[in-house]
Amino acid sequence: MAENNKSSIVWQFFEVKFLDESKAVCKVCHVEISRGSVQNRRFTTSALSNHLRTRHGAELTQAENERRQQSSASTQPTPCPTTLPGNRKRLADTTIEAVLAKRQTWDIDHPSAVLATKYLAEMIATDLQPYSIVEDEGFIRYSQHLEPRFALPSRRRLSERTVPDMYIKVKDGIGKLLLAGKKIAFTTDIWTEGNTTKAFIGVSAHWIDSEWNRKFAVLTCEQFSGRHTGDMTAVKFQAALAEWKIPRELCLVVIRDNASNMANTNTDTRYKLEYNNKTC
Ligand SMILES: [Zn+2]
Image (cartoon, rainbow, N blue to C red; front, side, top):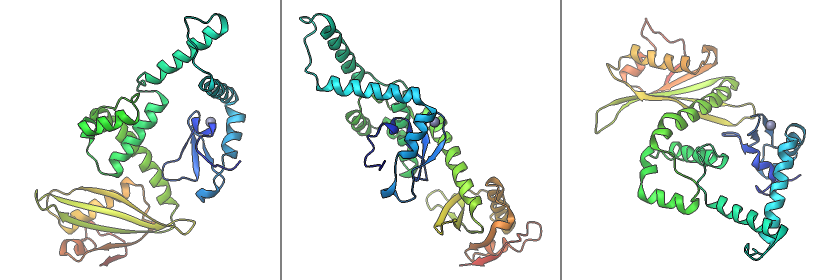
């Protein structure tokens, strides 16, 4: 079954895997299923349908029946409930219920609200937007226009639950991709932010995956207080490797600038790094 659009009923049960479009994740049992190809124009829904038929047959049948009812309700003229007896009256009630349901605000755990919140959190992370965007008048108006049933989550919920949960999932995904690399190269730097004079350290990883795709991830970007000596820099770098559970044998090279503290990162006796250390 070629995947020609996203209206297929399978997408009520699946969502595309974050960071890997070649897979879809079942919303019921969280199993990952291949979309049949790594090229998106050749994706299919066959395996997804098979999964639903074999594992969630009852739910699939119910969804198909609901879809059939919705499409027949939308093609029927709306009858007047006060003048129609019997089964046509029941149809009118059903139609009114459907209209009211379309105007009701989604509960916070409604599947559509969960999905909309997920995309909102991804937007905040991807576009470096502040959490307070959900309190901005223009954004609220824009969101209400697109989907009046979606009540925007609070900035507190986003910052304390949604984004931290997403961080754990993304970190887990990147960790698996990292460890699939045979060798990893690192770049690291320390810089001072001009207005506040606060210092930051960044560590990035670069590797080639099993299909020869070049991969890149920022492992840490954190404030660096105290003296920026070579040994402290080495400690920060080693902490980043430990945090991501990267074994030393995967480390190919560390690229740094030629500032004296960075150059000393590799010569300090106490925290000597056994890495191939190059300047740029
Ligand atoms: Zn499933």
